[in-house]
Amino acid sequence: MDDWTYCVQTLPKVSRTFALNISVLRGELHRSILIAYLFCRTVDTVEDAAKLDPKMKIRLLKEFSRLIEDRDYREKNLAPWIEECAAVDGTANDLDLLHQVDRVFNVFDALPKNHQDQIIPSVSKMAKGMAFFQNRFQFGEITPLENIQDLEEYCYFVAGVVGEMLCNLFFQKLPDLPESARKIMRQNAVSFGLGLQMTNISKDIIADHNRGWSYIPRSIILEKGLTMDEFHSGASMDKNLQILEGLLSKTNSHLHDALKFTLALPRTEIALRLFCIWPLWMAVKTVSVLHNNPELLNSNAQVKISRSTVKRILFGTPLIVWSNSLLEYSFANIINDKAFQNPPPFDLQGLKSRLEKIPLEISNP
Image (tube, rainbow, N blue to C red; front, top):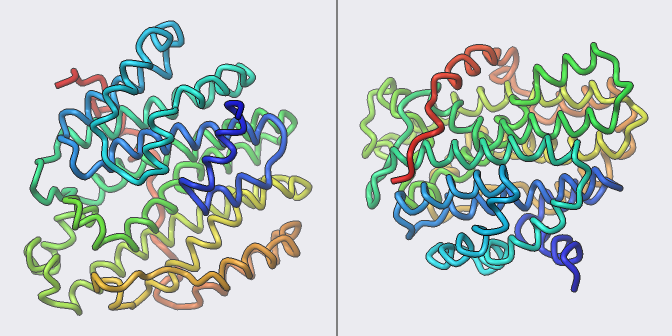
């Protein structure tokens, strides 16, 4: 099969959710976002490798950032990088993508330059940011984030950069988009990514703990009078739920920002709106399932939305996609709980100020 066919067939194997919303796109935007996602999945596979020493992860991630930034360098060094990735562990489909990422690059090199220019800095920053956090990882130990600021910074590198990239790619497709809409999208693009990522963090607490990482910041655990061991052992279910409800409240705030981003898109851009709505509605539905749910902390339970819920989203939202008021009504009724009303605002400028101080150009170990 040709390289593009390989990429199209690989996408649903590595992500069912994003394969759904990417499928509604057409033309060059479809190709660009699909390829960008496969790049993100590639670096994510390296970061998630449970058996790989963090020093090796850092080297592979930093090298990937250089490979995507410099085409001349890539021509000589991509094959050796793929060979080094033989040490990476993961699912069969993720590893197949990792070992054939040269085919993704082949398609990438044929994309319009203005699309490449949006993808390169975001994917490179993602890889460098992941490497930065891996530099703090102690192999064989549970490594927690320290505070909410840490959580926001981590989520920015793994998801916020994707929000920025998508925003910029949308701008390429919509050259006549009013500046007022552009401003709303720029203000909320990062928050969109953070909302989806924090939803995943909330539902994957046990799985992340089992692979040696804790995305629940140490500071909010200590504030509830628990040690890290007590939190992860479930010593106090009530306090654990309070901690997680606080995280869900922040997640809900980001998802509200994601709605603002989506509604700023022209009502006539049905495909772009559905591309945003489907993962957003699934995330909000997931938060509603996680809300006050002790099963979230049960290692034997997998808390997620049902297939029937997914189908209702896929078949129901196209009927209201054109109407901002109907979308707002639908969104508000997913979590109709006073606890989630008036969510805390997100300080984007504060995050950007902190990000400027992070030394991403650390040397390889």
